[in-house]
Length: 363
Image (cartoon, rainbow, N blue to C red):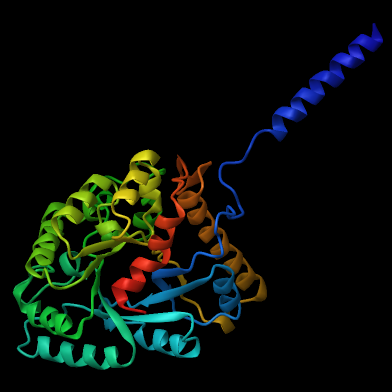
């Protein structure tokens, strides 16, 4: 009897061990092997303000280069930019980084506004800028002298668009925000819950003076349509990341529009993977890889442990995105349970490298 009881306990234990060993964690901390390093990558939207001793090795591991995208932020002290930091960083590592300048609408009522910005942009293009960014200041932050929010299709900006067309310089446009910015912040699993909790100045739901989502998107659409010979890269999936059908509708309507994915993979993961994969398949020549990853602290202000944690964190985040795009396993991203898209090598080549290479004329 004792032997029978012993065998029963051992059997139950083995069954328990087996079931635990077969429980696969959501996601894979290592990149799936399919052409992981052979596919060249250019991150079309990054913010690596400061040099890091580890970055060249990390970028080499990922076979990656990156576009440093300037962001002009207006506050009570004036306009803050990171252009000079990016220029220094890119000059230190010209094999790793490309440059992107920026435009903000502050001072638009001045009769010299357009010409002064054209002259500045011309100098920054000569210094290496291959693209110009417009940010959500347009539509959500910056006002003109009459107190109206400046929309991206404002006629006073047209001379600048004409200048960029003549120079062959495209625009990357972060116009508007995810639609959740106009919704109550009541779901901690919302992929944007943390951002609007920490940045309430952009949570339009509590700021009724900010124009509606529909108003800002409509102005953006008019701008794209009115400048059909200007190449426009709609950042963050065009602030329509909650619905790939909305993005597809614009891509069908505007041949000069392209899009990239920076910090919107959580929104993609909340949608049906088969539908998202079909979106990538259909628009494989118009979608680019962007991460929005970067750094904001100087290396000499950080401890060795902090730098190591930062490096490991970056590597893990790039892993997660790669696994979502190339694999088919279950995973969790930004609290969204989903499955990998299983994109083909052809699509991954275009998404990670060829589309941005063509867009910026890098070859």
